[in-house]
Length: 192
Image (cartoon, rainbow, N blue to C red):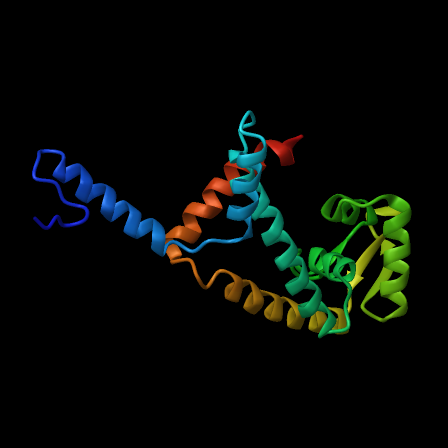
């Protein structure tokens, strides 16, 4: 008597078919290095719940890929990541593209001494300029120059093209779902 694989003459046959379909889907799902990492830890430390690695190790690896793409997009326009961050903070303000050094500190999450050094270097490169703050006699405003705007706009266009390529494997609906899930995860961390 021949028996067909994956079928059963009993009522359990429906379950066997469903299991077979699930196995076929799973066999088509792509695998990555995280799958191997998680499997190895599960084998070595079955006493630990390593499921968080399935998400967070992928986020970490994706961050490394994104960082490499960012650096490449910025380098093509003779910018370092920190330079882009400062120029982008100014550009996002809209005309006249200026902020106080304190506002730049908050936008880029660096110390006062670091920001002073960065503004000095960007000013030497002709990408920003300082001017007295008309609202505060002791204050200054950092303003994006035309050259700075041109450079940050071009770098942003290249960055977005690289980011689109990184997301190309996800349908639009999945991108929205992923963005929503990451927002839920990050919101309490950013608030702290």
